[in-house]
Image (cartoon, rainbow, N blue to C red; front, side, top):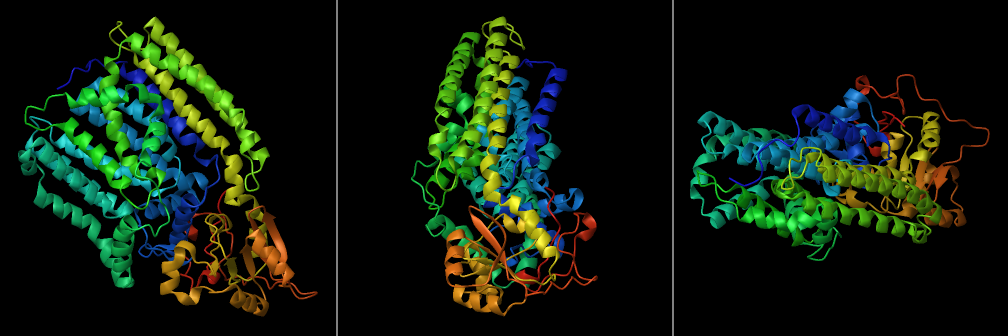
Length: 610
């Protein structure tokens, strides 16, 4: 149905080797960075609490009910912790697996719907695009959601191929409905609203009414609700306040109102996609124009029209939202990659040479600009951090530049699968793409000079050592701030004081679990025999001036952790032998102590591996 060369650019052994190299680059660095606030720390801690409490129905964060999102990723992360221990790479494993699987899925789908060359190039484009590769290495919900939405789209494309046997059509469509259900369990109603709206718009644009006869609506709806319904029923039975907060507040008010304080102009996602697909910008418009001109399949279905509708509608949907984050438009990346994958094999070697030469020059200019990173230093992120990060950025740019030169050499020699001036080789494109993948990997790893500080992980050993000396029910307060990563690193939840932050809903339904004012906390603190608290430095300095008794356990530029001074000559009472220890070694067998009555009593403490 298109004029993309159908010959496989490299033999299967070479392609398998390329996948292996890609997998090594993709998975090995998962544990090389500390978790970043807020998303990475939040979702890691939710999974840790789910594992150690044994409550797989009611999600909790820092000990409070947390119904902002469904639990699929929390389940997956908790299972990962049970199987492999609690740590940073384990917290990112589900995200990385869904990102990697998305690349393979796009390659498989493009190969089956179009041809083998398109499949290989589409997978390469997606896997090496900064938008997809970087988001595949952060513990957020959007990569998991994007994978299940991609499976929804790809299953539909695969089901609508001409001359497919009815059982195959039914199987692919049931998979489509199942993946929509898993998308809903990943992030809510958008998992079904967005694909449904795209399907309606497609049928209006393409006038493909016959498609609805091949959707297997009855069987598909049974599959969908069989997967979605059980958790929603169980969580509502246990938490009567769930439905209103989840559907009204989080699914509709979040989109329609600016209450989440995540504003952005209507064009917010334009630079996101430009940077996200930076390696392929010079061919993106041509790819869209080429796709628009392609004919329909013999059965009347127009897969390229469906993909274009998917891209435009989802982009506009999130552009109109009052709440915006960089990762929201990630589901458009796979179909964009397929459109580019269709067009790339049509380039001449001369066109590819100009493309590569332009990016070689870009890397030189970017390296010159990186020399000035040190000027960005401030009190929160000192200059020395930018100086350290600059080394990583320059190394990343050097690797990308070198591989771009290799790509130019391969293209000039016509190696890597190119048979003539009318056909580029996969070798040149793969070298260029791997350069971008390594650019993101190396620079992303270097970003840990900032992540180490923001995570607070260097403070964790001293805090855990102090907790080990205290009774297991020792309260740990978070005064005026929600530290998203510290609970995970110390294996202990915190009692919120004065500022509930995003735990406002949990505080509202369990008000006994927090302290509404700092004055009330001071009174409680003075009455406690044992207690710890995490305090922002300005608040700590003010409390010192007010004479609040505190002894520093650990501190950094962003947080001060203190304990209630022990009585003169006194010592902390050791934890009873039968009590749940605060920092046991991670193991699946330590998965289910009793659910704590409050955040203070939640020793919930499988120790993160450092």
